[in-house]
Length: 395
Image (cartoon, rainbow, N blue to C red; front, side, top):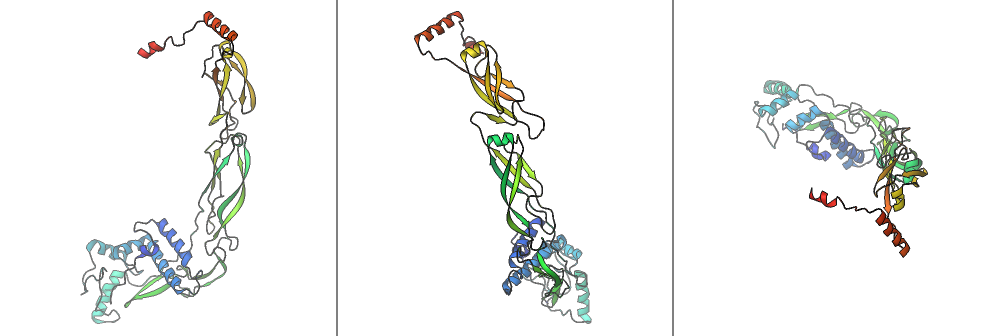
C-alpha cells in the first residue's frame, strides 16, 4: 500500500506558505462563496473544487494540523503529532521493511497487507498504530464565525464658513449592510441533515488501502444542511447605499476625523458593525487664513496712521471689530485680538485669537504740493532707516 498522495493546500487557496491565519480564512471565504454547490447547482467541477478548498482550509486553519502537514507533506486525522515531530527531527519513521521515500513522500508501506489480522501483517499494524495514533478521528466542525465589520472612511469637502459656524451634511454612504432577507444568518428555512455526510460531519477518503476521515466539504463538518439565502448567497451582508446626516460642529478643523460608531460595514453572523470616519477638508478664504483655532489677516494702514497711531476697523469672522494701532507702528507688525478667532470644536467654551498683520502703505506724490509736504516732513524729522544696517553686516 502506497502513502497518501501529496496535495498542495497552499496552492489550492492561492496563498503563500507563510500566510497568517487571517489570510487563510479570507482566502477560503472568498473562494468558497464562488464555488459553493448551492451557488453552482449541477456543476460537478465546482463541487469538486469546493471539496478541495474545504479540505485545504480544514487543515491550514488549524495550527496543529497545519504543523503536521508542513512536516509530512500530507495530513490525516489519525496521525500522531508526536510521531510527525519525531519524523521531522529524525529524518523518517524507520524500520518495517519499507521501500524508503517515494515521490517525495516520507515513507512507503508498499508490499504489506494491513488487512491481515495475524502474522507479520499484525506486527506492521501495531507499528502503523503507533505512528498514526490508533483509531480514526472525526473532522472538526467549522461553523461560520462572527466577524466584526470593517471601518469605512469618507472624505468630504466643506466651505470655510461651514467649518467655522458648523453645519449638517446629508451624505449617501455605500456600505455592507446586514441582509434583511435572512437577518444576517446567510441561510433561510429549516436546518436539515447534510446529504453529503448523512449528518456525521465527516467523509472517508481512500488512498490505496489507507482510509482518511476528513471534514465534510459541503457542511464544513457541522453535519447540517443549510439553504443559502438567495439574496446574499451566504455572505450575510449585501451592498447598500444609505442616506446619512452628519453634524459638523462649529470650529471643525481641516483634516479632522469625525467618528460615527457602528456606521461602517455590517458584521457577519451577529458581530458588531465597524465605524464610519468622516474626514473633513475645509475650504480656504481670500482674506482670512486659519491655523487651528486662530485666524490671521493682513490689514493695510496709511503711513500717517502707522506714524501717529489710530483706531481702525478690521474684519473678523464675526464681522467688524475695532483695533488700536500704536504710534510708530512698523510694516509687518502683528497685533492680537483676543478671542476673536474660531470657536473650538475640541474644547467647548474656548475660542482662538485673531492676529492682524499691519501693512504700511507709502503715499504716492500725486502732485507738486504733496512732494513739498513730504520734503518738509523729511527736513523736520530726518531719519536714516539704514543707519545700523552696515554695522550689523560687519558682525
